Amino acid sequence: MSSFNFTSSTFILNGIPELESVHIWISIPFFIFYIISLLGNFTVLFVVNKEQTLHKPMFLLLCMLALTDIGMSTCVVPKALCIFWFDFKDITLDGCLTQMFFLYVFAVTQSAILVIMAFDRYVAICDPLRYATILTNARIAKLGLVGLIRAVLLVLPLTLLVRKLPFCTNRVILHTYCEYITVVKMSCGDTIVNRRYGLVITVTNILLDLLIIGLTYGLIIRSVLRISSKKAHRKALNTCTAHICVMLMSYTPFLFSTLTNRYGQGIAVHVHIVLSNLYLLVPPMVNPIIYGVKTKELRDKAGKYTCRM
Image (cartoon, rainbow, N blue to C red; front, side, top):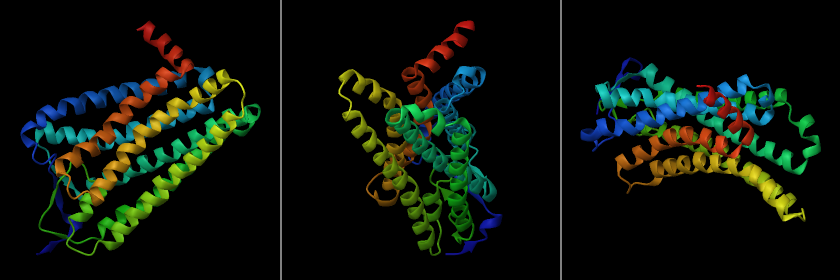
């Protein structure tokens, strides 16, 4: 098979294979979920910015989470809607690599934020008297910046490795966006380095972050069990429920999508693509709702602005 110069090529994002005839119907939940996620996350950002009483570490973390949610969904959904509505399937090399870079930077940064949130809950429950001195807004901002820098340093080589790959005459990407492993599988060259580096990122980022979060919650549970009052047990654990729900919403579909893409040969392509998109659609939509319901301060302040409208 002949290969072509990747740097001067245009690829075709095929959307969801085998479901092309219902693309217009699939676009409806895509659009609705995206609009709801934008409204919810921008509401969180607006309310926290307006209310001085919410200028606390926990709400600063919520703003960081909202920004990554907006970023992840915006990297994918507008282009997917162009495919579904207008059949605009072409994407240039720069467009593909840019989408891939920002999507994974936001995803890796979000994982870091979830780790910081777990640490925030640990300090709040296990060392509440020192909470204000240990976790200041400035320190949370620095931790968030470290998470962003880590994401850039991990993801940048990912895109550079893709740029070096030779590609054959098949330029159709069977997806709604430039997913890394899907693009790598299209290459007619040696992709062993790309695959291994992608696996390294998954292990060092997601699995390591999950391990840290698991250890943190182990310490939280041990501390809570030392409290004699059952009412205090419930109160302490209730402060963690929103974070646990967000973690489950974020990590579960991501891990399932990653594993099925690498090892799930028996799973239909369109099923994998739908699951990959749900990972980018559902958590950004649900996360503001979870924190709005579970966090009384945020709920009350958001309600105040809603009543004015």
